[in-house]
Image (cartoon, rainbow, N blue to C red):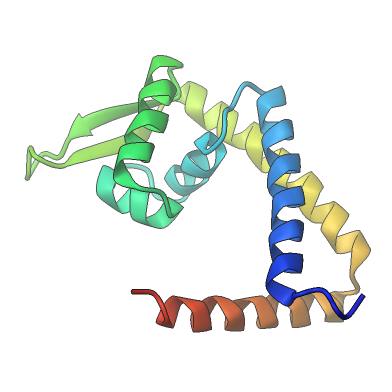
Length: 142
């Protein structure tokens, strides 16, 4: 179907993947956005809240809501930066680390499904092309 717009097709693929990820995350008690926060904190625990918003590509106000729910669930804790008390840093709790491991297993399973669909060469080419599109679109941001 070559008459379909490329952007529309990309949005459809992203939506199907996003919906599948969210459904699987809900199975382990994580709501939308929480898995992504866990991944970023797993790579770098204690991120400033503003940097976490930037890395997860969400508005700071939206992230605050997600973090409030995560804090209430015992997944994260926020602490004032020891140098600059105006900065709030976000840390995983032990419960958050366990949830992150579960979320990683879900992502590994979904990545495996994607990997079985494309050859290794196709995966590399798709990754290269998506990165090229991401960079081009990022340059055009206001």
